[in-house]
Image 1 (cartoon, rainbow, N blue to C red):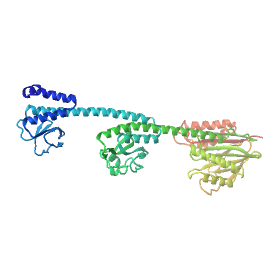
Image 2 (image 1 turned 180 degrees about the horizontal axis):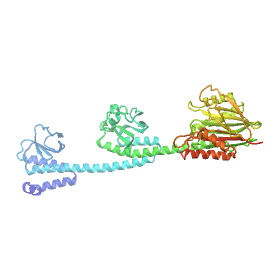
Image 3 (image 1 turned 45 degrees about the vertical axis):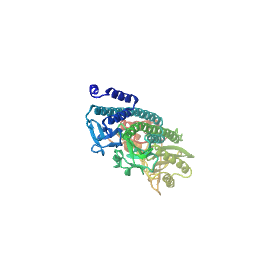
Image 4 (image 1 turned 180 degrees about the vertical axis):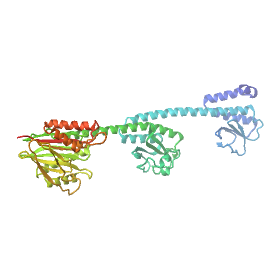
Length: 528
């Protein structure tokens, strides 16, 4: 090129100086315009213009002598002018040009290409600086949202940052919960849909390059941009912004805005996941504290030690399947020679069962002090439980009144496992049910019965966690095995009998997890 300039251009040195000065001054376009004017004057032309071509579109770089269009397309003509095609350059002149292929013409074309390359380089530098600023902003935003662990506050912060980052008029943040996208926060604009299904057909439209704003969860928007909120490729939510604002008004989002919003959504996903885990941890901690408190309260409902009953040995034992159980037992004195003995089993386990146990204990103490064991007491207890609990909650109970003078036990069995009475000689009797569980149906009726304990007789009240303890094959311990064990142990001290029952259940279950609460109360009449 240098030899070409030296041999064919009278002012090649001046050209190089001008182009060099243009580059150094950052105004190559002005240098081209001045040189083009001199070039037109040397050839006696009315006017001329230089265009740079990108993607088939010619963009004006320099012009002199007349008004030329800012740009024209591949197949367009410029009225009253001739277009000369050079590599990536178009020379447009008015009038005849005898030397269109002259070195001076090529030098002008080279100046246009240099200008074009410098513009591209400037754009690349700008984009690089912009990406740096963008990444720095995203980093700062990430730090800001990562410091928030409250989910509601975080959702508001995420949405506010997203809308500000992209100059959007409004936005919405949805979290995926139980197969549905549920609105966490909405900012600006009209109404936002509260929830929609994960497999909603609009999801693909929302994430498309040009989503259908008529089917958007955001009302009254013209331009929509949506990206998924994901953790390791798994959806956690959707982040939507709409209607990019500028000095010219509301318009569409730029191509790079999707990338920016996606990068932000990645950071937001981590922060949102941490906030959800933090909330779950707090909820778990709260529930554990409540369960510990409930377990402590329930233990206070059970007797710390069985009282001393004249002429009788008594023992009680309870082991809940969970931290808080639904079994209840008690033995307390009502008056001279009268003692109340009860074992109850509330449907279910955990906190709801424990609350109903408390209700049963309170009702028993209030009603038992005013009326003797019999059908009326059963009816009043059942009505109280029915009125105080949900429809799927009820209580099985076996309640006995022991006379320590006569040895007579008057009992009422409300849908509970039959009590087992082992006579001193080894005969077995059962104290069967005389009515349905408490609180199961309104207007329930009950029947009572009585037995007399003689010296050496052993009475066992228990919950179904004992007889329904199952082995690996699903076979249950059952009433017969329990009765056989009681017969074999009837003469042993009651603590040893309790230990034998515990061992039998554990061995039979073969180390399987305890499936239900287990309670046993034993009463044996001593010899005179």
